[in-house]
Image 1 (cartoon, rainbow, N blue to C red):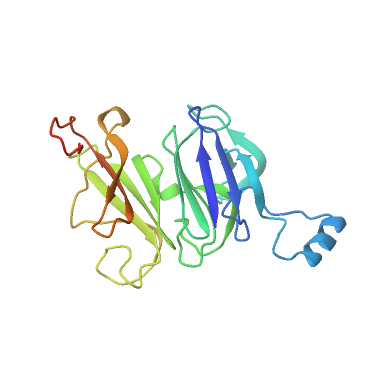
Image 2 (spheres, rainbow, N blue to C red; image 1 turned 90 degrees about the vertical axis):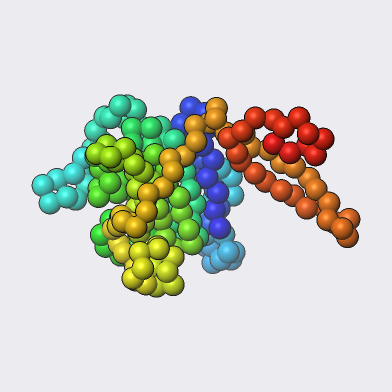
Length: 232
């Protein structure tokens, strides 16, 4: 129910439904006039955005008990505001990977899909502390679960970490249960994502026997084939 757009410079814009905090724009603070408007048109919540809105990702300063110190941020290699490298939208939650290597999540957390070790919702992007210090190279979001690929320096292999809803086996842990913090899948390694200049993505239109159009999307590391079938 929401969309996320990342620019070449690492800025991120969001729009769509923000009822559970999936947009990461903070809790709605409706004025009396907006409250009247919401009663007249309940489908347009103060948390929703009909146009893309810029969202800033910060490293907030935390106290000794782990709670965020209000209005205090610390700099990282990106500066005071993190540049977004990757973003993924789940059903009612979102996850981003910043250029400095941080994984941040926001939104609904009924199954622990935010990865913070609890089940409380969040309306702002908050760092997944369990992945701090790990070399995260990719993130993804399912309906109510989340995943990250981490390059391990010890054996130079890429490991898969998952969290969130798993009662139907979504996480692949073999246990059929949910996790509120990242859990590493021990049974296999995963291939690291291809660099952008090594991958070729294109759209090829084919037609089935009934002459109905069929869109085929592929992404492969390869050279162009000289055959006449147009494939890569």
